[in-house]
Image 1: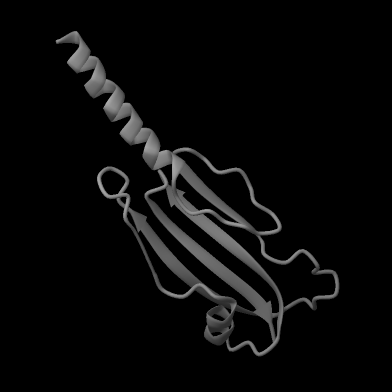
Image 2 (image 1 turned 30 degrees about the vertical axis):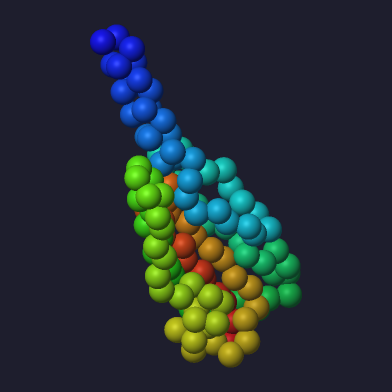
Length: 119
């Protein structure tokens, strides 16, 4: 009986940790640390902004991500967070620089936002 209880406890811990280990993987010039329970940050997609003018238009596009971590490990993402979609939303024809935001909970739910600046 003790062996079964120990197995169940270990299985529950493994299932909970699996949720924290997954999630959205972001490859950008600057990647802040990711939290195990909650992650919220904003970072640059471009690092050369010295020549960018001030007072630019801003465009935003975002995508949502949901993952089922316990049985199938299936994930679903929808919407368009591309630079093109953000530029179109902001009426921008020339992009000077871009940032991104990531909001993630337990590696199960995430919202990724692309922000572009230009004219």
